[in-house]
Image (cartoon, rainbow, N blue to C red; front, top):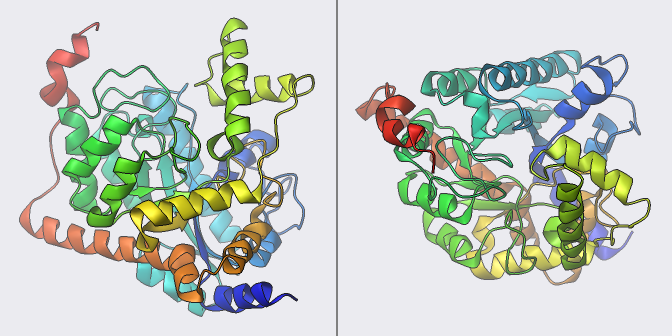
Length: 400
């Protein structure tokens, strides 16, 4: 065992990885209709990026499961599918109770570790999951969902996505109210997928630190899903965390160029790149004749070090996006490989103290701060009764 590997092994025993985003629940729906007899998380080497043995080998101590539904689902259909995702995560926790501990708070994460279990958390990926209803937002929180990504690949009526034509200019009045209500609940505001203007608007409004559950640095790879330097710099004062993702088109310039060409080809073929399931299928087929350039571990290291330089070591985390992408960088092919990233950083001189902040310390701090903000706000105000019709009425009928 190399010195770096030994350092990382010892580190993970005390400071395991809290990963910000894993799409296994949607894979379970897509591959097996949520049937855990057909897709048994306890089995090593599932036809997914994720299973319990590999999570253990990867030093994962807490996982935010994405209760994602595609933004092609809207309204009641999106809300229903999100609830089905939540239901699956709860069923998974019951079936694998010896390994997975339901967690909603920092204290519950640390209690899971003390019991030798992996803390199981949930994040909803896209504001379409709440159907423009603060009551639905509150119910997702009551069911244990601890972050909401404000958009997915398409705009929602109250927020602009990074990969759609801007409409709101960031957040509408109702969008700001969503952020305020999330602060009151103690629900983390997740700015992955949103436009840069939405990022800035949310930072202007949020009283609690925000997160990027699975994003990388735009200065290193110019993809709209990544975080611009001015936003990264604001994390230093706002207290948030950018959880670096491994998706090749977000971390590799060559893969990004391939994606631009694939997007154009998809549009020509009548496939919307924002429709993730359809576009992923299109890209898999296209790769047979137009192979996608491989991203590398070094590409991910470049993003981590850039974010550290701009935002500071206190504002880094990990959000691999396993089972949410068809391709992954060489050396980071599944959830067992987090130690490889940490070893590469150790070899570049990162201290155990700094690595521990990135694996779990920073996101634990954010959870604590969000809980304190929630306590303070709930002492001052009750649930918001605002509606989108009340706050955004004119814009809802504006055809522009």
